[in-house]
Image 1 (cartoon, rainbow, N blue to C red):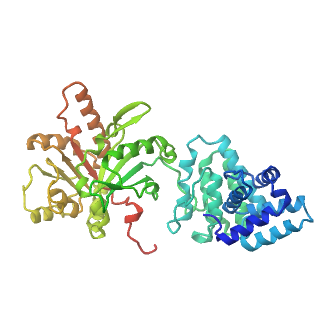
Image 2 (cartoon, rainbow, N blue to C red):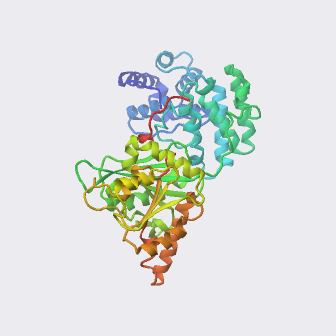
Image 3 (cartoon, rainbow, N blue to C red):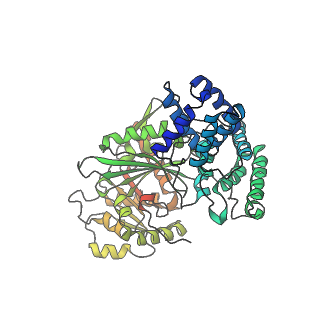
Length: 492
């Protein structure tokens, strides 16, 4: 989020800077930019160019990305060249085009110096992914996710300073720094708190809003380790039936998901492992996730629900292995996600299951056509039925044929387990009974262990028929719906 200027105004600003003799040559310009960075308390992140016009263009873009930077540059140039008419003209143009920031220049520098200290002394290399999660807590649901690439907390602070006052009239920047103080650790924690208190006094805010001991509503609860979810959506392409538009999100707990991949290029299923491998090894937010736990969820259309996605092979540091033995892997229904009319029974059953997950009743079907579709729908619609187990795969014929799996989804069942290759009914009943016993909420991790056991059997030449090699687990959390499918709700 940067100050918005049209092309004409950008050109005016660039030309005004180039008219200042000391800013028209890159070598001299670098000296003043260095002075500016010292004044701001952090570096300006932009790509330098050999051509003067392009280099100044990049500088202007950086100035607009950091509140107060353009005004600080004018102040520095006035100090060096107090009688310069081009400097005076530049100052007038900046005053016209760039709003005066609400945060005092000296206090902004103190904040950025504190963040620099935090980066150097208090945080491990994965800090950025962890502390970025404080951004949505500060801005609330009304504001979008970060809309520009960020390389440090300095960038996050610059974005937040441009957002007007949020809940209770408190600027989101103060909420963010207040939260940051809770988790940063000494010695910067105390300094961050003092900084927030000064801003409360200067801005005329109610001091109680940011006093941790008196305001549990603003000071967040300690960050507890949260489950991380890597969500891979495969949406059918309208032009090519065997290709899919792939979107990937990283979600921490119930925080809004951050988009990692959203390509207009439709991919074949064979390319999905390649994408997974890249996200797991090169995506900074995945590598720097707040806790090591990670569940991979495939959001799939009905035609793909029976794909053995957990058997996808990836290569990590030269070791090729199936993702299903390293991470809990589950599938979710894209069709149900897209059909808002199906969300009410789904949410209702998930809420019930969340409070009754230990030894929850299981509806077991061992053969296709075991009961009439309407009879099955009626049976599965019961309030206390939220888990379905089937010894057979979904119907592989016409997509709209309502098989048992689809009836379960329409009825709102959030947890469905089935065997992809068909199974002897008695054998499946024995195997799935042990798997679904105890706490259903821990089923993804128990399934991970089952898949590991199956692979051990394969290596010994005894486990090719192990259920762990043929089991699909649909584990559809109705509390965590990706943003494109969230229904708008009235304000609380």
